[in-house]
Image (cartoon, rainbow, N blue to C red):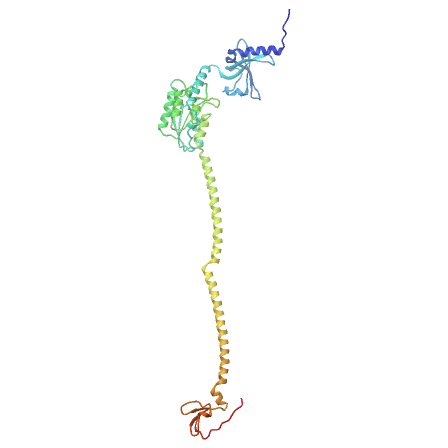
Length: 404
């Protein structure tokens, strides 16, 4: 009788194929208690689910960690959504987790996912509809329970950061029947009060405790609000519909207060630093301008009209001295030439000639006698000498030639 013999690999592959073809095992919810939970350094989570009858090995790979919104601990009752398959290397089957929720949250979580998808398709989560949170809010509205850690945290942080900011509290019911209506009324009333920003929030809790912030009415009230809204619901791992619709999400109420209330001391320190920089800048500018003024004063002193006048006066005095010197030189030169001319004139002077023994002879009519042809015997003549004149008459005229 012939027998078919298979390898271990073939058997494991066959079984794996059987698991893969089973539709139910590919999309299955499994409920149980967490045991042997280990967070690996690679980001994978290895754990087991057990109940009173048995145990199943489970793994959630690092790429699926977005489906886990809390930190798993031993003994927690959880619901795991994923697929069952065979790990061929060991031949053991295990549950590959895609999402993990605490037990009791399954139905609410499905409702949450459906509403989230619907509102997202309507564009209510779109970033272009988000309003800018004012940097220096003066009046801040708070929609939360009047008692509890959330409102105390907001008040303490606001007082510490800026005691001049006014908080207006709307005491809302944040859990249970009537909570969604109370939250909507609070948003609309604070909007009418014309506050600068609104914080809606509460402390952490289960999905049932936070469900009021997953209601469509609350989401629409936040979306329609003309005042910027900060959502601060639960702890960092809790994300509600209100967080997606709000203009800004804060992981906790304390963080919301940090985001909404500007730090007065920080601004004060910044202004002091600006004042110091401004004073230094002004002092530097004054110092620089004083140096420039000193330089310009020196230049102005050098270029002052007084100095120009003094230079001109000095130049005028020099020209005056030069002119006087030139005039003196001209006078001396003229005197020298005049003296020469005087000497020349003296050499030609009749008086000098007379003093040298010569005389000057005129006819009776005053004509100068230059030749014997001008006179005849008996003419009356006047002879001028150095100390007077002589009246005489011509007795005779004789011709004589003088050699020169």
